[in-house]
Image (cartoon, rainbow, N blue to C red; front, side, top):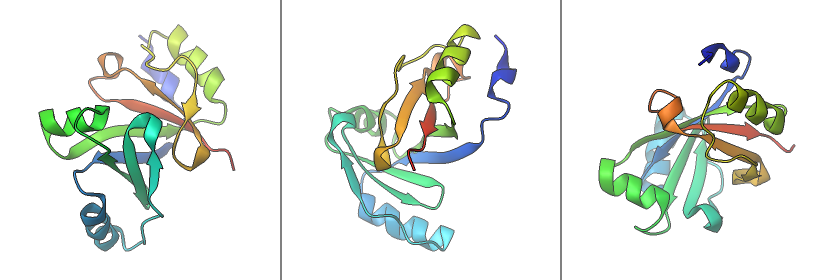
Length: 136
């Protein structure tokens, strides 16, 4: 597998799974010195999110969601690393051709209305990787 395919994709954010978004927001505001964004509910992904600088905080909407199960198994912690893409569909094609396993063959709506897609951790050294195309 050619791991040079990530060259040129800048880091967008890191995401942390947390059981309490308000508590985590207070903590990360102190750490980053930046106010957190307004909370947003992504019902389709089963989370409430807020951004504190380049840290995305993910609170599960329930224990039966992906992030809820993550916290149950592993506790709070790093959930994924996100890279910014100028053309997410082209990057998905390129990464798939390079041997990366895609969770999302097609992008889906993410926080802030951006397009997102995930790469499976089995092909990224155990780290869940998200691609983000900003819609601004």
